[in-house]
Length: 193
Image (tube, rainbow, N blue to C red; front, side, top):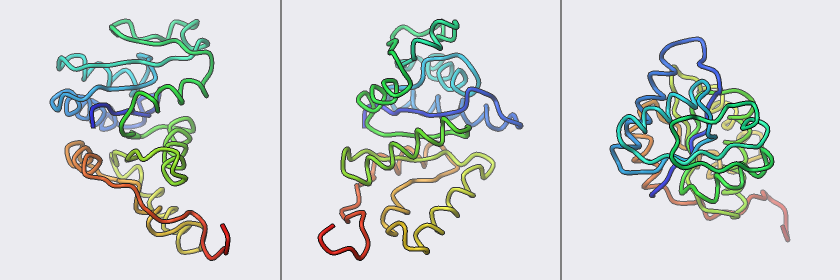
C-alpha cells in the first residue's frame, strides 16, 4: 500500500473530535510514507486531513472537479493537483491513484464514494481495501445496516466483513495493509449467476 484515498466531509461536523481524528489520520498517513489522495479542497475535514499530511512533510495529491475549482475551492498549499470535468471523473481518477480507501465522517458524497469503492471491490473490478475511521461511533449505524443486509439475504457475510471499521487511525491503516479481497461471488442461491 503506497497511497490512500480519503473520502470525508467538506464540513467539520458537530464535534471537534471529527477534526482531531482527521488530523490524526493525516499525521499517520504521513508518518508511514503513504501518499494522500483526496478531493483537493481546503473545506471541512478535507482541508484538515490534507493540512495534517502537509504539515508532517507528507505527500498529497488533490483531484478536484471543474465546478469546485471555479468556485475557488482548491487547497492553496497543494503542490500536486488535477482538475477534472465532473464528480464521476474525480472518483475514477482518485480510484486509479489509490491503493486503498478510507472514509472519515461525512455526508451523502462521502457515503456514496465509500459505497462505490466497496461495490467495485465486491464485483471484482478492483481489489482494493475499503475502511472507515469510526470517530465518535459515527459508522456504528453503517455496521448495523451491513449486518442487517447480510441477515436479510442481500449480502454475503464476506462482503459485510470486507469493510474495515476502526476507531484508531493506526489500527485502521494496519488492517487495510493486511487486507485481502473476498473470493466469493456476489450472488446468493442463484444458479448460473
